[in-house]
Length: 491
Image 1: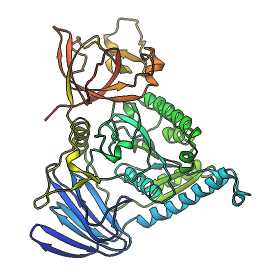
Image 2: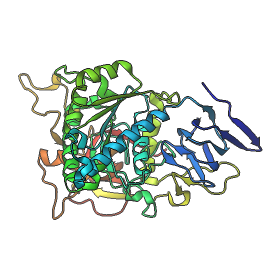
Image 3: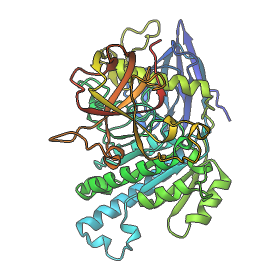
Image 4: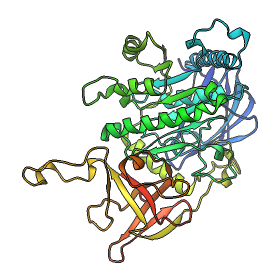
């Protein structure tokens, strides 16, 4: 049930006194509305990230979040949209999960060090937590991953779990249309939907502490897995292989474990052969998952236990009552906001009466970026599209002809063609290997990770040049980029 905490209103400020194990939930209804929150006394956290007493935190851009307290606290608010206090929260379930995962990490560390206390442990008991979080749409999967990761890094054991984001519609640390992974060694802040997992060094000033986040990013090019399931499968294979290679040389990281965030389509979409839960089975195999966390879905929990109960642990936790159903229009606005923030940084209006604040724990004046508009020749940048999106319909093929392009084949795009689809397209610039260019064969292109993102703002076919918006200066000669279905225009 909802809890009527004590609220004192003065002018444009409101003070809430929260009882132990309750949370203040808020929803900002407009991208021009911001909320200032200050912790006056007590202890409080936002999705596992602790708030500092006396510091003003700014939330904006239609942010929807909750501030939880274990022991009680006093909060000062300015300009909320929708707000209420709830004492029905799933935080005790997350705390129990954290304690169980902490025990797994400690046992793994003792076994690694050859401690006598690890004698008699089975091989499965010597493994760190490798967690797969699944659930239906709008169940709070990413929030669950943030809480689990934040509790791990706050444990005081110098854990640095790898957080894997397989939801291409989420955006993760960079832009929508990608899957990514990053070791987390500090709490993940929450401030706007633009950076659901925090800002990375590719899109943040070097003054920010979050610039320590260097995610490994692969370009899928779409926000829905069903657009190219084969490509998603290939990218998951590549990402898992890179993570395994890293952990082989990082003992501390391997002990900290792995947290995998998944899209809802993994629980509903069957493979082309009709195999149910094909992506979940793939993740369990490739990431060596030993714990599946199911959020708020009894039938899915039963089916996971039936499918995997003999080889790993399946845990169901309740869906938070604060989870908001997000409509398509909201998700589209968030994708646009993420790309704008990647190029320009974040700038939020301060509520009346607030002279300074922190956005995700960082000073707001440090969050503006200045992208560069570059005019390049068509021949400078080789652009590929993966799969069949560029092909003519079957009816347009010559009689007796068959398709020779597969879902996995990179196809070169000619910007001079009227149907290239490059105007306003988001391009993923691939990492250039040390000592040379990427080999222009299919496998090398598919296995390459992303260095950054560009947006095509103009195409001049007469001069064979195009204008791209880039987060930094520099030549693009000889580089390779990938294009998908994502587009962005300045408003």
